[in-house]
Length: 208
Image (cartoon, rainbow, N blue to C red; front, side):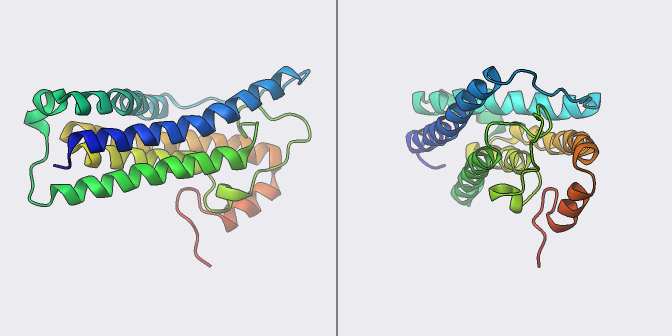
């Protein structure tokens, strides 16, 4: 297993990178909403199964992401989770792969947040809002949800924790959420969104 203190420092760095960008963008979004007289409201009904599969793994992920570094640094992590830790001759390789996946998720989430600007496309779209197809949205239609897929696979590997592989169920949940979002976007943007769907993959980039 990679040195626990080193892993803790890396994960803390990821947290800082994620929240420095998202915190700044959220402040800008809040200011923008305050100046908006009548924000648009969309009928947005997420299927119950998608809420359960998406939000519960997300909650587990963030709790682990926040407190995991503290447990690693203090030395309690190995004691608490010893029965469910993966033990393999190449476990360091798994951890490195996991840390790379989590970093990829953080970078994609930050890139998507910056690309989207101050408005969440499917939650609150003011009059005159145009379809976001720039930046990360040129790569995939739902960069934030792809970042969660990286998180859900990467964190169990980074922490070598078999229990955390339940997070992978969250990928199916975010697929359901994305389908509902696309219903809203199709209703608002019509043919423009259909063309966007043809050119850009939902979760996996299209080649060519």
